[in-house]
Amino acid sequence: MSRHVICPVSGLSVESPDDSQYLEYEGMQLFFCCISCEDNFLKDPDYYLAGNGSYHLS
Ligand SMILES: [Zn+2]
Image (cartoon, rainbow, N blue to C red; front, top):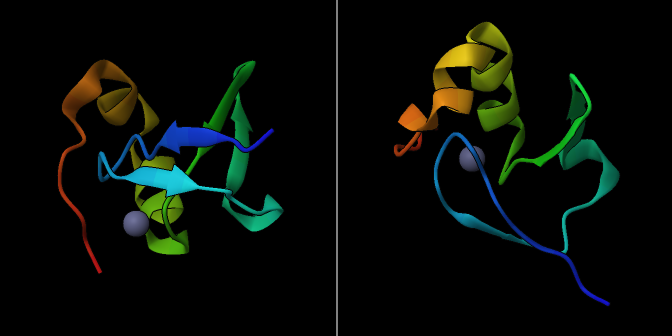
């Protein structure tokens, strides 16, 4: 079974994320399209959890 999830920062779909893209935050399982998105999420988790993420910073 393949996992298909959406990066909460960029809004991009994440195909078969590996462990480095995975973060458990307050009981939620989150997957990021790349490390920079995870970094951005951790700077302001509440902002992205509120559904404000829709851009990609490289
Ligand atoms: Zn990304």
